[in-house]
Length: 234
Image (cartoon, rainbow, N blue to C red; front, side, top):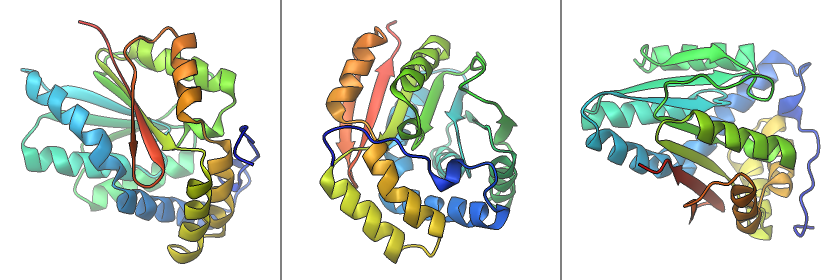
């Protein structure tokens, strides 16, 4: 079942998804990301870059969804006293509204959210770091390769992609997390589908080669996820 990618339509991707179900799913994904400590994994390379700079750095989260990763990163930056400007883009107006509301409640009004279809339009320039979490498994190979290339082209220093690993253990974890951590039918349905659509480490490396990205590193981390990192040569 895990030997080849199986990309199936997910409930979260459907434009006719009920707004209440969509919001519940965004909240549930935020909880799962916190338990998975996603922001901790992407924070360390961002922190190192921020420390090395004599100016504020700018970070863009591509397909930011409910903005939970950005909020957590902003909290870490505030605690560390590092001047980092955070922005997030997404194609979903509802997700952006949800993200803005949650950021405001958390006291992170400075996070900027804007609507942008990354599969149809170029990414904006001027960001030191361009990151994406839990988005690439939604894409076909050609779309993923094109977006990875675009992220590398537009990023001034660093590209970070954090996503699921396509493994049997990951499939079981996604199934269990959906049942025991949330009542969202969207997450319960989409979680296992997402794992079956995820890329393996070998596939990521092949994609990086096809995109002519040299020096890519891949770090496995809990729970059955991995972080791809590429830094622009200086």
